[in-house]
Image (cartoon, rainbow, N blue to C red; front, side, top):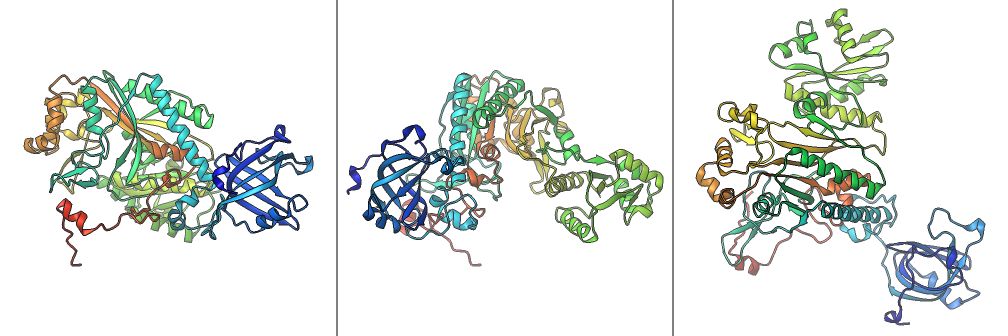
Length: 593
């Protein structure tokens, strides 16, 4: 029977017991095939669900013979009659589990070759194989759920911003290269040989120009591109929710974005998130958690004991403090005893992150012991125990180094211990704003101050007088949004006058000529009636990843790249024809190494 004459009446997730006796036409993929010595059962799957089919030789022996040869993932269409299953045969785990369809006719639209891996949730295929056959991987139920969740999240975002008076405006993908962060992806121009467009790392300048244009409230769900080293929560092309508003303060941003997050959790997960969200100052976050994107689902905060051990007999501690460093630590409550082997592993771990080592103190009974305990007086040990509220069974992890190293290493160790000792309970969400960032930070590599966020971020007004003489003292009107230890958003109030923006460029070591070449169009706009404005960008992929309970954004992106920025499915990036290069005026110079 010709496939073009077939038209389905229902999808594979639709039929219920109330449909008993109906003649139906279904189409989909063979998800399972079971031969019960006469009767053949096939689970037919489409994007809506799964329906069990029954091929009965007593009703149609010819079609049963055809059904015997069906391979997994073959695409078929069937016509049949809905039957209610006997009560003892109802599958309560399937929405269609009350019924099955007795097949009367079948057509095969497309046979499938043997599969490189099984289409099921507990797939044990290597990531490389899954990415090579991504179109098969996307058939797995868990991947379907993730992509549908992403869709629901996007629709929720659009509906929310529309209700709040925002207008969705698309900004260009081909723009001017203004590298001030990660490397740009460059696009050569055929018409203007020797010149290049850049793919946007963010629509930053365009969103500001839209405020100058008077649109007041803008948003878009937009693709961005950064040529940077990748990891689990990074991709060379990613999606962000981009937002900008005029005539606002930071409180307006907090109010709008908190409302968005509450709506997303309600629409996508049917969870209620309480607001207002917690706010942590940057310095407080670094001191307590060792990072500006802390996971607040568990405690085990970093504690400073420099004042206690600065004159102790343990030279590692005392000399660290005397040289301007510090001694800080974590207390693992009710920890298991740390063996010598485990201690060596943890020392290697902290050394790999830049520290000299970790001192481990364990409280067993009434005594706190370790290899260094003999260098500490009982009074010092008692003070340390009191500072950490240390109880029997607790374990301390102490690091002595400069402040930055202590924070970074202990922040990383904190998360490692929490994961290993199951301190993070599933289905928890902890969200906070990080505020009062430094506007600038010193770069030894570039021998100059660089912006903590980007060069268009405004300074806190009462700190502006520090800009010329003590720029490290200036706080930024910037804010990050952190969820479960991931930075899911960041933004700022912008410089909206040319004079202030020029002053910032000067501090950053960007001379007038360079500023004009890179940002002249924006500088001119700031002289033509630019309103006070600010905004934020939320990482949509990271947000969906967390909502879906995944640990990598690749699990919520339909066609992601590998950590080396390769697309294993289509083989990109790839070489191009020499004629294409000639048209662009480009020659490839092969490395001699």
